[in-house]
Length: 583
Image (cartoon, rainbow, N blue to C red):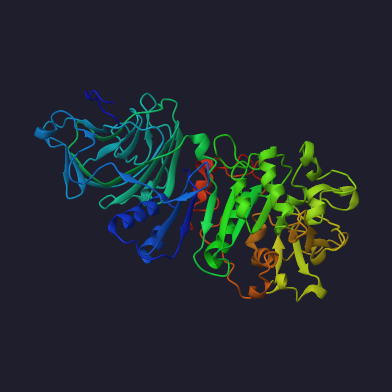
């Protein structure tokens, strides 16, 4: 909570984490790693177990070129250079640098004060350790102006409000979550604060605990560390590091990257593109990407449809980062009715023209709608002699055409779907190790294009449970197939397509295994498909029930960075606008 004072001063980045690297060569590198752990890009437990972890990339936003992360100390640990020391500090001893620690304590008169940086900052990412000392601790960090992130007991509320924003005139407009569980009252804690424009985001112990849009935020100003007046208290800070961030419009364009270090996928790049309206492709794609990256060494770039604030928006046609397709070895799609601009589509069509392998799930059969000009041929309902029924039919092997037998087959939220292997394809590499496949999303019917190899068919069940009985009036329909398409370059590209794949569908190990096998097959790696391959999720996977408007809110790609961040964040600001009703 702020206090009267008379001082005159007032990435969201694209990150790839490697789980096993050589030990950092010096303490400063290890300290940087600790900071990343605090930000949630590396699991804190994993850091304790594997101190050889090392961050490998911090990407230039506009160009996509990789560079080392730079978090520069703004407190040197030896003195208060770079800080505007408040008048009276020498006598009162409020702020002292002792053995790398910024020690803060009340003076005899209990006068309050703020230690401001001399430099002013615009957008920044700040991380530091703090340890509460004696007395009733009431401190915090000021962000460019009197807006403050609280540390300790609020004087007005009489309880701990650590990580919550205090806004003059508004008090505490939101309260940080899970603080009782995360905060260590008598030990070192690690906090991360990000300020981009008017948005403040805070992490504690690697967990995101607060996001707030402040109307009183200003574009530029110093950073302050507060000692509240009227208290007998002490608090320590150390490892105060900061990196300046680009403007929000640039930062939100940064893709999410998971990169493994060893395995058959080492050196191979898969680009995932997720933007559908209903079936939570924004959850399926990063979940599968993590498995392929950590367990098999692939580099997996995940692109999302975004809103103008950089949040993941289901079904958005604004998909930054498509230039990643230039060096992609595989394209993994979960799309629906998109109409990207021509510049974005060029990366997509260039990939198809060179014959790269493609995997499409669920609504990707009707990926595009409303494209104009030269790209109109990719629309799901485009009829023409040379590219009939658009991208879906010509590349994946089917589109959305209910009158011709390709449409809804089992009612969502009432009838679930069981898939089974077509007997004559039981030895196909994609089916190795695949057993029960139960999907919560209702079945689609399909009539795949000539030349497709149908691997699996579906059964519409009379309930949402795996042991439901097949409906007698719904004969099995193709649900998984593979094929090849002929590209403009003359090269043939392999294709895997499934009418299932919603984020709740891949909870089924069989569905998940089949999709991962499909990736291997598309990339010509079928000899490496083993029936007991590890396809377990990496990190917390908590899928959101699918429905239109049911995506988790206020989630940025960077919130999903690292192996341990949840897919998706739950509750509070992330609560979906809608939830389905199920029988």
